[in-house]
Length: 249
Image (cartoon, rainbow, N blue to C red; front, side, top):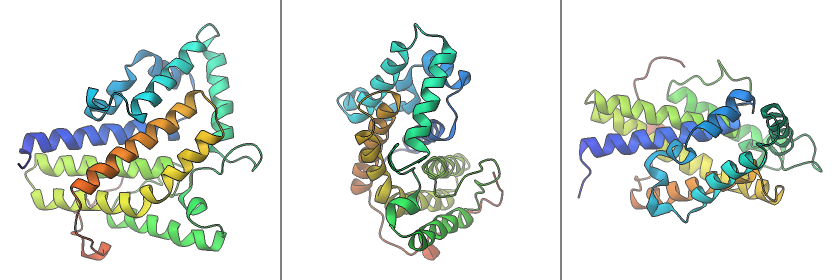
């Protein structure tokens, strides 16, 4: 039975919210606003219906609970102390200061090629996706285009553009954005982000970013399952209908 237009919009909006939250966790510094937001909100709501009761035993729920509990353990300290502790862990686990200090940082080129020259080709491929979708992620973020947070944010933007197309009744353009999401997930995020998460887990016995890794792993596993159920026929990027976005971000 096919989903109704309303159900499709709900699913796309939920996916966009999930990617937005995950990208935010990797892109933002853990300052006072960051910690206050996490303590004030119901973290499960941040993932919309994807963290429903049917997934109560999943890694997503485990990750969310670990993130919240790690912040609550630190609440007897000042919020500034909590921010400092998170900032130190973020540097160790996300920024790749040294090989002995933490895992390799979350850049696709590092995880898909052991040689710097080989990694450049993956960076070029990612940039080509951004160009093809007419989405500019470099204007506000001073980081390499294959950074995990930016790739997650790219998926968020594709979901939002699919949602916009559905609202305007442009099913062809919505289909183009849906196919771009499918291809980018299969050809990029799913090829390396789970390995980074496993590396992050091995370098953090517990704590906030251990929970983030569990959360992202669970989300990617769920997206992989959904993709398997709704697999698009393989196409070259040039044969996927190009969305008429026509504006940068």
